[in-house]
Image 1 (spheres, rainbow, N blue to C red):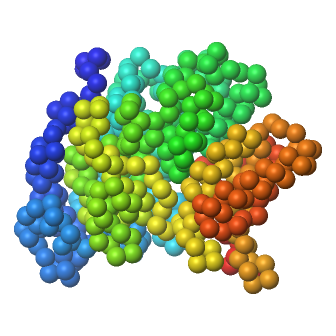
Image 2: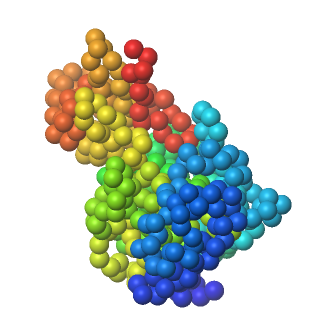
Image 3: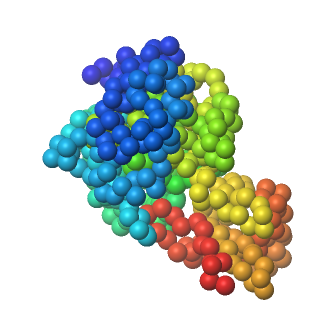
Length: 437
């Protein structure tokens, strides 16, 4: 392993566009034949009147029907597998609150490929065997824990499987073990900083932290920059989902100008979520992915429901794998209020422009007198909450900017720091109480 090389897999990461497309087509043909071992895909192809041999180009992929999360639930638990169950060595599952969860199976080869992808991502942002990697993700069924664990180990870093929560212990590990790389969701990274301040710990002076990997929940560029300033690190955005394996699907490089998605692992489509027709590069739509090197449970044209776009142009880092913009939200968590479509990330982007505000906020939707309303509660930084006139001016300013952004006038409530409920998992940003009225 050349520690001075910018690439973990130089032969794959530096492929030109022609080389990427050639490799994708070769792997797609193998994947389609392999999918015929799955009862689900045999039936799906027969219903569509197509055969694997009908897919001769990447454009022909559109002949294949989409695969959805509902398909996984309807065929729970193992209906989409393409190998014998005794050849599978692990499964991960969603936390589905009602009905069947989604289950993803992995073979030994799948796990090896997954670790390779995560190691490639971490290497890309400068991680090396001399680093100490601390993972604050949950382990178990959640893929963020084990996915980063095996990738960091493959790269050769000393790993600290701290898991989620217990912030005081997380901070003790930073200082005692000399942690240099941290994986955390954005809201929890901000919480770590708050507790550091309470304990009189300066992350720049008292820790060796330099790299932060963030993801799992939508966040704005302003939020990223604020976290970088808090902790004195470079924060790199990542994207993963359990249906694709977990973390390692797409990752920013040191340029921080979009997430490279590994096209030797996935074929990328961006479609209009309403018409399901492809949209031009640069236009926001729903991300659709086809796996190219999965053995236990390959997925064809999987609708992720995540909204993003392909960024135009080349990246200065020398990688030609396409770059995805940060996730704009999801096509299925959109708020519809008074006929207006709103995504929580739009509200966050406005809130983060105010230096008086902290990172945590809560959007509550209610019905009052047969009228749907939105309330935005947001925590304040350490400011004088008794200065009523200043608070009123701040509320009016926030309300005005939000109205310009989302075309709805919300109620604004400024609340003390650390007064909103905290979660060790993904931050709860929206409470929809309208069904109760």
